[in-house]
View 1 (cartoon, rainbow, N blue to C red):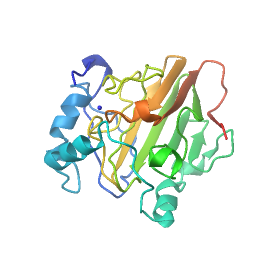
View 2 (view 1 turned 90 degrees about the horizontal axis):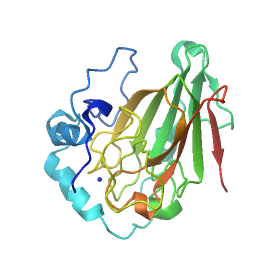
View 3 (view 1 turned 90 degrees about the vertical axis):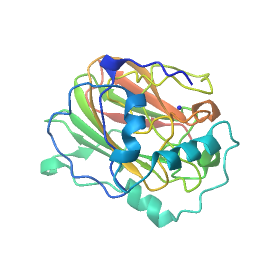
View 4 (view 1 turned 180 degrees about the horizontal axis):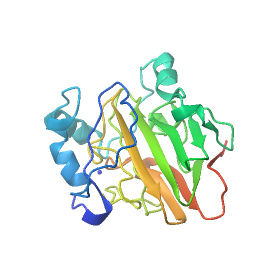
Length: 244
């Protein structure tokens, strides 16, 4: 999401969680062993909830290059639950600059956790993150912080994924698989996660730069499903800005 460009040193083996949220841990993630393509190949056996590789592939075939779907039929209640703020570790977190309730900041630990919900609203035919598409959302994180990105697909029609990419628009139909920041990608990057599926991304940001945050399913980023992710050497704390 095809001849993927793999950077083994930049990507690590990750596992998909099921529909329910996993417990947050601070244990070190496993040593780098492969890339998103390797993870996607084994996801059918390792994904909680029994999602099969065949099902994911079928969803991808229908999504790639297709016209954007009509608004998802999932309920607003489900969307609110998926994006609801979770309690921060130790109760130390505060809201980010920008006043959004889907980001929690722990300045002492230099850690930021935020929700990314695909298809949260009908914007861009459901192909959006937290209701924003075409670069209308910018998430800024200071250099040296740790990011915990809680990703959920709320689009009831099409699978989606998310990652931090070095590429900027205009995007090709098939995006490179190698993330711009090591470990900053959701499982099943090219096939995407089905409706209601969830994955948690954990990665440090050690190099300042402007990145994008696109969907990795073929054709989705080119159709506007992307936003900005900035790692700043000047920012004192995480911030969120949007365009109306």
